Image (cartoon, rainbow over all chains, first blue to last red; front, side, top):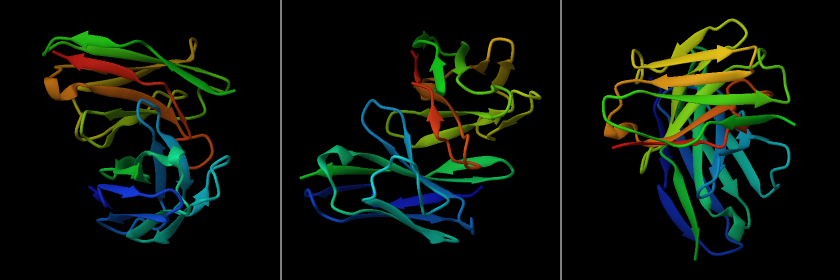
Length: 108
Length: 118
């Protein structure tokens, strides 16, 4: 099975900071990589699909990059409403899906 | 507007079974696969598998093979997930989700169903 490893597991940032979260796949997944935001007590929300495409309605301060095994989610100028846990997720045609362990983002 | 509405919270004893429903509206129910994902306390989101309501085809994660069954009632636009032989580690919020736009990306989620095994 494909393993997804995120880092860091948690971070604390000041409002306006640039935040970077990484996700590494245990094997090449080309660009089949999505990012989700889950706020406390809420449902996961799709932010980025196919590694770098912004889902409709998601603020432009969110961006994604990467291909193959290494991927990055960036939040430019993090805002208080971005407090959440962020997950990467891969999906293939077996089919199977695997999520990273999550990165909890807090505001200082 | 697309909606997935799940059944309410459950408390079950170890060894019992639970069956959760996921009612769909606002789209053609038999077109999109319904996936089941759970979030246990302190754990990561975990994909359990999916069902294609149109033909009933199911795929299960190896972690749940033999213990979970997905079904779908196309006349009621409702999908079901039954998990058997419950253990304390199955305490989690269970979600149904679909991906309507991009293969493998879950863009619409049910509200979640809390299952407590105690």
